[in-house]
Length: 212
Figure (tube, rainbow, N blue to C red):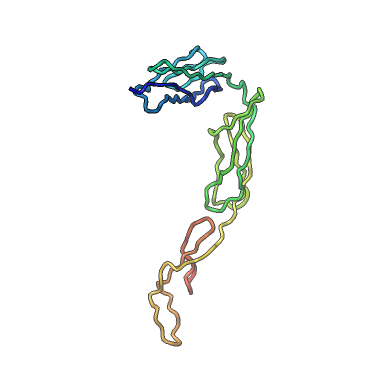
């Protein structure tokens, strides 16, 4: 039989706010041990509880989470510090987005946008569950976007630029392709597609005809 010789945790220290959870992963050695099962315990479940490696913060304080192997009783420990939630949200700050130029017809580009919540105790934390005011991709010009997190707001400005033609292609050849010298061009059936810088394509103007 292959006996267990030890166990380790992916973290030896962990900080959580009340209500948060985190996962601890135990590694039993050797990897081919016959019995790699283990149990978990917390020194103070009023501070943090643990269930199969999932640590849930309950109240401010410090406790130790221990994993114990069934074979051999080897142990590994992670010290968990639980902090109280910041008492009051005082505002939000924006970083980005990386580009404030958008092309007509394209969705709002939020690459690089970071929203940071600022609390009364001086702590700060990036948040993702914010909302944005409406954005109209078909309105050319400047638009102000409002970011809302809880009851706090901040704004940034974007510019929607008119799409421009970047190229054309023949999507359908005209019905008549053979001519004798002096015969006038007959464009019936010819279809041309225009490509814009927002990635869209649309039928172009046919020779000798007005645009649809």
